[in-house]
Length: 278
Image (cartoon, rainbow, N blue to C red; front, top):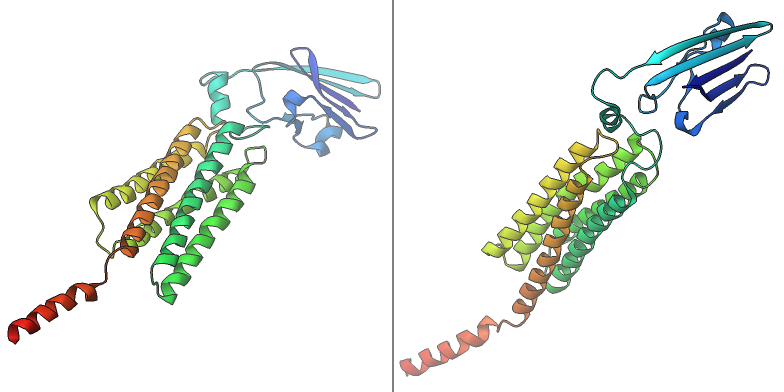
């Protein structure tokens, strides 16, 4: 048995029943028999991803021994147009995100991680922190790094698969850890008396996270993703806020180092008091 499928007169799928070999064109790489077991019954139906199923005439030619048969099927898209359909349905091949967008998503997340870890190192070296709090900060930093690395590994490969979507989720969702971490670090530096500027930095990072999550929600169900720039913008805001916070932490720690000890101020007062009593 030989089966051929043609689209508008051009062959795109062929099956040799003797050698059991299939040939497909790249434009219809997802084409396959609905049920190969039904071929002896004369059923040679194909299934194709909706994103590859173009409107037009599809011709099926079947040759078996001395018998031949042919049938023509017309495919129409009744809702919207072809471009709308492609935007809503999974990508058949290629990258989910354009390469530039993938690079910026990963870049801005890791910049936020680097700046946050730098803050953590400054605070740990300049301030006395309890053992429990140190362990908590180390675990928090480890979670962020692991989630970022695994997310990048899953996002980069071509295709629109659950792994790619999970990768984007690991890059965006765990970034919520940055928010309490930022508040905690600034609280240690300024002894729980946050200035309005420090509060604005925490709020700015929170805004960036919200934007990134909204972008993730818009991208996860679309291929190609129409709102990749929203994810990038959110992560860029978080990275910028982390950079400014790093400068803030460095300034705050240096200010603490240069503060004169209280004892040196109190001693002259005690001496003066002693003179008056005499």
